[in-house]
Image 1 (tube, one colour):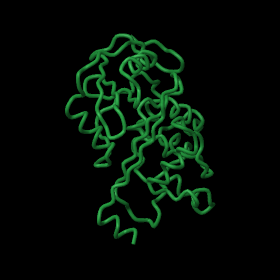
Image 2 (cartoon, helix red, strand yellow):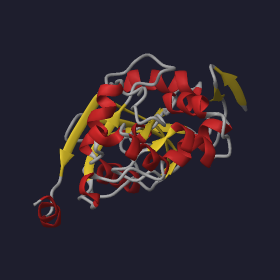
Image 3 (cartoon, rainbow, N blue to C red):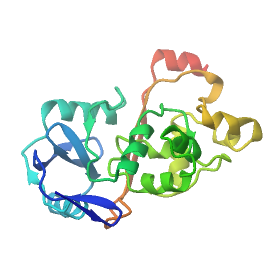
Length: 241
């Protein structure tokens, strides 16, 4: 049974049940809520009780605690945090509206080191005049760790808002991923936003490990932690030289 609440769909009784566990990371303990094999929500720096309350506000029910994350899920999350590979596991957005789900699933396709505009996202999901609604959907992203909402900017090249800490945090994340922020707002660059802004030098760089943990705008603010660590390979060093 679904109940509409504060712009989202609150879940009452769904199968499988909502569960959660934590995993130790180089930063802090990361709490992950999931149904079956699909991640629903993440938070860093919260205690177990606090995370349960967050889930209850978002989903309408308290999750059941497990002693540990399922093995495959834990590995995928840790691989993502350490920059080994982008998270490709399942996500569960069933408590968001259909429009919000379409927006967030499209955002998952934006590659590291590139940006797209709110207008581009709106066109891609078949809602050309809904650029502002796209921004609202991004503000409700419950899994920013896996869904890179910081890679969406304004059509004129300005960064726009970011629920994970404001434009300054957004700028740091994009710069770390290789986006040339100085050129982003120049006229010759603006058209590239629709097709993807390339990294500096036009060459691919080694995968960066970018872990972003955002507070949910519909919930009590959580601590925001941005952890950045760059893994340079010999290929990356050669490209930089």
